[in-house]
Image (cartoon, rainbow, N blue to C red; front, side, top):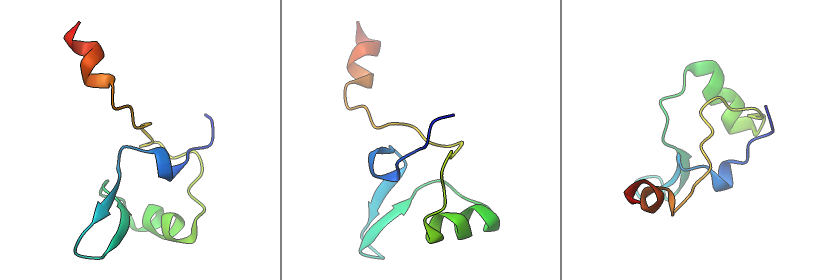
Length: 59
């Protein structure tokens, strides 16, 4: 699996309460620690953000 980039993941969203970007997936404790340390390569939840995904489904 290729390395993931949180910046282009659809689960990486802005949280108004914390005033920063966070992962929207409910990570377990080990995954959360790796995410916060920046060592979260090969994320199994990685979903590249594709703003045209819904349009392709409509065709």
